[in-house]
Image 1 (cartoon, helix red, strand yellow):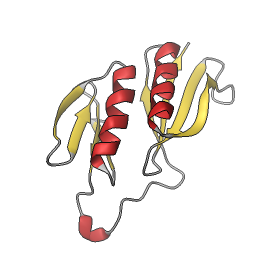
Image 2 (cartoon, rainbow, N blue to C red):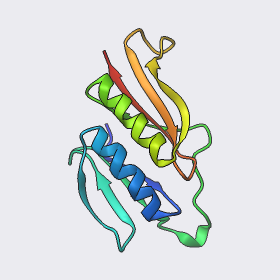
Image 3 (cartoon, rainbow, N blue to C red):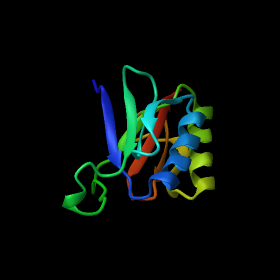
Image 4 (cartoon, rainbow, N blue to C red):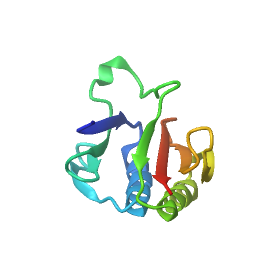
Length: 127
């Protein structure tokens, strides 16, 4: 459904360290971007994830989407676990440890973290 998703980050280098680690844990690599321009894309070309500093800085600081989140696919439960472990190790906040979410479905395995700007990122795999 989505071609890409982009989120704003306030400290690009710190966020780059986090997203490099969690995307590698999921098996995704940097696709394109420019560290000097504070822009990086990850994932497969047909559906990718971007971090960047705000594109309209005159509107103020980075803010997160209250009540919303982004969910990334993982091919295995082990990759969900690796994503969560990498994120927490780098300093992301826990939003829900890896596990089955029976209120979604009996095979929905997911973990949630909050990045340094409060963006809620989920990763899930179906068992």
